Length: 108
Image (cartoon, rainbow, N blue to C red):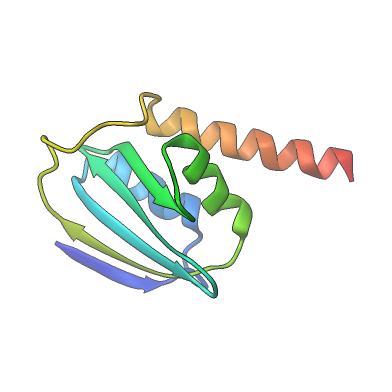
């Protein structure tokens, strides 16, 4: 399965949630005005992220904070041998991202 598009129609967290709920395995490539990133899914769980020379959870939150993800491309593939750098469930990562965003709004 290949999914591609822009995030003007679908926001990034909704896309992550869709891939998680449907237990997809594969590679999500994202691009923004300045950077490219990759999110690896294994049976709906995010197992690794690379963005701006960072990996793991730090890279995941950097993508969300950048707010300029423009397009995505998801390729289905098995990743059972991929090194895992993220051990939280995808839902936990999404909830933490939302909590961080709420915290920023409160501080402003």
